Length: 312
Length: 227
Image (cartoon, rainbow over all chains, first blue to last red; front, side, top):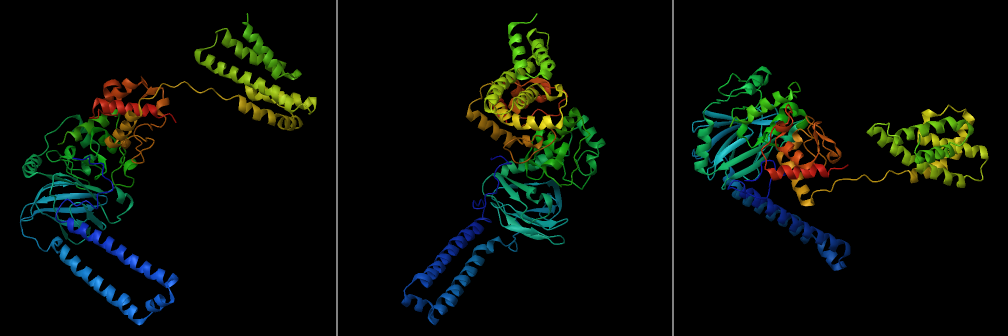
């Protein structure tokens, strides 16, 4: 698995599943077709400027206008439309079979809530900024937004879909190989928009079952770190299941220690980045809604970050 | 009792500041240098005084050349030039204030000399420890970026993030101490990078999971940062 922090920009032309392959094919076809049309136009321009009188007369004739100006674009564009619709029809989330894994993802300024659901759409597990999926299984995403318009985009696994307040948009993604796939908010949503990243972790089916089982029990950690976490106001925004911390404004931290990234897909997750994020998240992601916690001593800061990284 | 070099420096000082009103100033300069020579000054003071002496000698050369350049000028102006130079070298505050006319003359006569002084008074290149090999330095920089050290530290060549929790690490190779407590040498720096609380208790920097080699590479990179 590649490092979570690397791979910027996301590999747009490297599909890793059936819902991104057609997008890539279409993108290459458009690029090559567009280049061919451009060459035809440039050739016509050259003929009009430097061609013989006979060539110029022919280019300016009514027949050339009919062929190059009407028939050619009509045929090319109609063909492209039909081919494009056929090619991408499989991407449509209207073709849901009921066998898909279901996850609701809610865009927030500037992170993502991830609510895993069962087959009936009931919530089973809450997480943030990271989605774990089994390989080879289509995943139906219900995309919503809590505040402004965001756009969900994991280029190697599927298309791009806006998250619009008051609406639920659906998108299918699938990974064919285990790995980490980087995502990115693709609709400008305010200051730290560029730092609103996302990670999809695809597991082999057995590994996925193990991961899921590890996520269901509540946290059992305790110690000075937890006391500081609770007494310093962290719990007003963050939930850690199994503790009194039940805030909802920020990401659920029940298993934050096992996440690949911090700060919504932007930093690697280790005790150092955790401490840095707690002490001054504003220096890392200016404008995000977590204030800088300058009041901790060195030892207190380490106690809190050490506690959080143990929440696996 | 003065050692012979001090006598030479005294002569130099008199030569540089060689106007009647300058006698006392020369005396001051000699006293400063003499303090060094007789070993009465502190180690730091000695270093400063030694540097001063070097610049002093350079200045003397500049004066001689400056005099040659300004030989067509009036004697009085020439004296002003010398006095001005000595003032630059030894410290302006040691000189009594001059009237406006004198200052103008000093400016005219002193300019050429000052230019020459700048040419001759350059500090010698500092002696620096040899760098680790370039591959280790490059690996260290990549490891620092990969581990997200920027979450707390502003590091040269890493555009984002530029955290402000810990100190900025520009020119770290010139820094005397690690975290204000440990000598900045490579093996110790590597230990500190990997497990700061073990060597600096109370540090906010946590132990960070990495290999010993990564820590050494990062230390090599940090020590290669010289400007």
